[in-house]
Figure 1: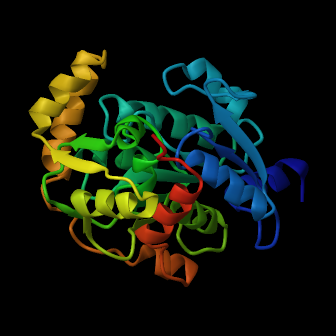
Figure 2: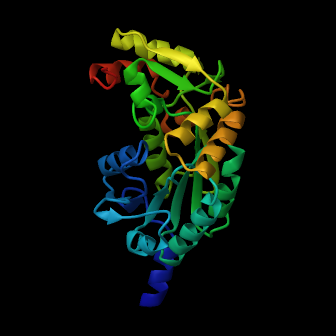
Figure 3: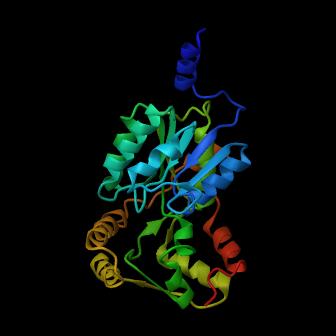
Length: 292
């Protein structure tokens, strides 16, 4: 076999079971990326943790950062910021996926969202890229209440959010990471598939805040507002108008009850039940995350 033939075979055939891979993790400082990086490293893979300010620089809005991050990687986890359904996500994900394939990164896993129609362009872009792809559609992250923009309100004792009394099966980001690392394996059988994952039970946002309140021993209130009211508040905090308008549309659609069901993806992929929200609330409360 010639060297060129060998290289072609290695490009088209992912590594066999038991071998480590070099895995590019985009958004490696985020809610899921950080945990995907940790889980991949624990599984024996070489992790290339990429972010806008990390040692491996990667910025979805700066394509000049993509090649260096991708080159030499065997697989990549794609978490588009700020959201997989945001304007321009499909174009950016498609361009990155095609460049990944051209550079020999044949295995791609895209983080998507259950019930988010706006995510279809990004999902389609990965499917059409020529990569061995998997789409992981997750429910609402439990960690959205312990990290990011909602944390300040939780610490202040009040979550103002446009979710009404809709039910959602909150998923622990650690379960997302475990699923991603498992489906990345060349022999996992999940190439060319969509995997839907959720937590093990349905909770309203009021229920979730009440469980956090009980775990912390301090009162935290849930205050439902309309998506338009919430969008106006975001604009007041300096969120760009286009992003605020997208979030209003997202909340009006994704939080309309369409996701009030359980998905069995975690058990299917990992052979175990997903972590319960109560476990998450207890651990984060013990860590002092929601202290005033």
